[in-house]
Length: 634
Image (cartoon, rainbow, N blue to C red; front, side, top):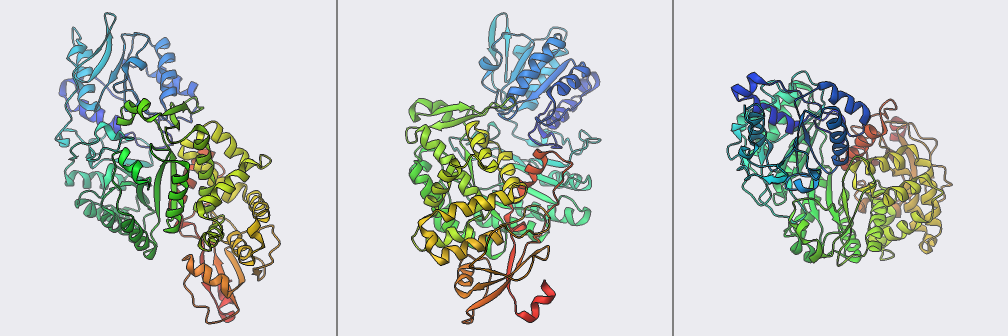
């Protein structure tokens, strides 16, 4: 049983376990297997009925922070309905934590510690034996005669080709999934103390053979999967990843799929990652290059045992990506040990000054089995569990360097960063204020954060207030919902909120600040494919030339504002000394989808989150046009 956060995700972990078990002739002859994969957002009573109706002898569950409360509920209810069945729990949330998840002493519930293939196979063999002896199963925890037993760990699978391919041997045939997940290797050579990637951090990277990977990629393409997630810890770490990326494009060109690629980029191969991302972009796939910095604070990097690429390398990489018009996003974590509220805001300011496309700040989760998990007292870590009936997310709310009040302030600063910078609500204005020394990015975000909290009359701000209080901001869908509201469903409300905020500021007396704000209102992205609407605002600095044409605006601006837009890299132009310039703002975008009203909010929020990461797909294009050329554009 897999319970992913989104719909239609291929259950890779279950597929590997089934393929490995069925490769054993005796097990294959004596057992049948069925994978059930349903999103955590589904009706839990319906989930329970479906599982109970299977009347299985063995139920297995993949356990993660995002589904663990739901798993525990299902397990309790299912055991009452099917008391003679056996239940095997695996995944990073339960491994090495049997004392927590087997606390009631039940002898028909087990925990797998480590990779699941070998443990699951031997477990199934023992269940079918005349006299089962679970002490013979490696990497297993269970209750026996009133004692909690944990057997010796199973060795990591060194030759990944020992695992048959669930793609190629029919495990996934007949299922209707649209989001494929694939591994080309296992392991991570780094030891970031906040991470527990695949139970194999600070370890050798083992690889699947290239021909098998290509066969699996071809299968994914031929079976019409819209999206592909490359589930390696560091895609781009190996030189062969360039050729594999080219092969993904070949498959897409031949079969029309996949359309979207997601990846966790190699931390120390920025040039190779830029090459890989460009391959995907040239091939017409929707993609964005992740840049995993997590922090730019040197003392924090040392504490979490991490080395980032040099800042000058990062700035050069950003410049290269912008020149090639490739979307990218920087990943940050708040609050890591050693980080203060001041250093966090300063770090955001540095990233904005480097013209990062998008900056994603993840609340720090206190994850089981990470090195940091054993350092709670030494680091002064304070946590709270997110308000959820499905997830078990333990969110860090304080460290020796950050009080709980500071932590929440950082979350509010992130709300401002996400809307003002990532979604371009005050992109031109923030750049102007920072460049003139009027107000830094970080200080502007802090001011906006305070204003958000003062406006509970706004539904957008009410959403911020509630999600921050419930710690729902740990969930990526939360940022997708923010994008949906700010750029679509509550767009006019957010326009008014912005106008009210700027009008209260001392710097509003600056005519250039007013010009920049009016341009921000007109260049705020539309995240769905929909007609452009004129903001309900009295423009005094920028002249709108007629009504929008459904795709954009014709506007007359000052040469001074034109130079600011050129400086913000929003267009290339030469004012040639003109006092006023006419611009065409085109909001068509490249790969936008219409709002799917028949689908759930979660489905649309998932789309919105992805589009913010691929911001260049939705941002408008600006061009200087002569009067004669405008009639054909408008």
